[in-house]
Image (tube, rainbow, N blue to C red):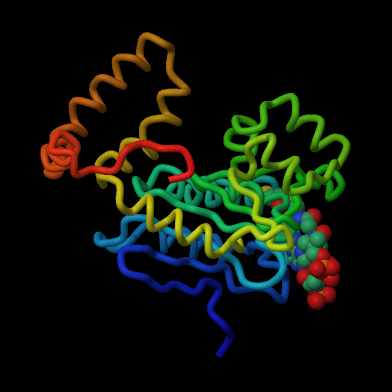
Amino acid sequence: MSDPILLTSEQGNIGIVTLNMAHKRNALNEDAIAAIDAYFSAVPSHIRTILLTAKGDHFCAGLDLKEHHDKARSGVEFMRVCQGWHRAFDKIQHGGIPVIACLQGAVVGGGLELASAAHVRVADSRTFFALPEGTRGIFTGGGATVRTARIISAPRMVEMMLTGRVLDAQEGRELGLAHYVCDTAKGDTPAPELALTLAKKIAGNAPLSNYAIVSAISRIADMSATDGLFTEGLVMAMIQQGDDVQERLGEFVNKKAHKVQLNA
Ligand code: 1HE
């Protein structure tokens, strides 16, 4: 029996999903996309945050170029493949549950598209980012023109794709591709440990607030200012009906809640 494409486990209310194809640098074929789609379509209701990780030295080498070469897909067939990626990654971004990606090594092509769908990205200091589609004779098809371009800006994505520029972890952080860079040689917490700590912290937020944060902000960013402000008000009105809102506010009023502090 072959190894599973994805390993899934739980730590309390944290779901952990791990790409398990280190032998091919976690390149994504059709079965891998189907497995990702299946996981994010049926996240158990007790799961509050999801940690997205990968086995081996590289997070993800993007599209499985061997499968794509062997299948010699027609334009329409590849369009359908891309739509499958879009569906699966949209479930990551808009599934209502915060997803924290832990990155290492190559985060390239479709791997960067996958990482761009996550809400928080924690990178090991040897992580690198690239969009080498131009050199392969293809284009992005897993959402980079929407998600990655909105993170780094469309002009930067154009330049990155045209020149084949490879960004190191710090450069990626400056552009928002990573939110945290962990350099263990400098005494930083290892990326997997920090990613898990953040996942636990995020799981402690009010679930409805988390739902709104991951569902509303990116959508409101696509709206006009007028529609965005109206929608923000509606989301706030809905979210503050949550069961735990009075309790959380009461903790603050009764001086039992933590204060907002630097380096807390
Ligand atoms: C692969 C893939 C892959 C590795 N598809 N098999 N993505 C790329 O253009 C990136 C292509 N990959 C690389 O540049 C390098 O492999 C890495 C920098 C990621 C890693 O290098 P390294 O030296 O650790 O590994 P390797 O020796 O290059 O590869 C090890 C094996 O993984 C090897 O197979 P083997 O049978 O010879 O052992 C590689 O062929 C295999 N492998 N990457 C298939 N991508 C929805 S559209 C999205 C569009 C894109 O994603 S385009 C970008 C594609």
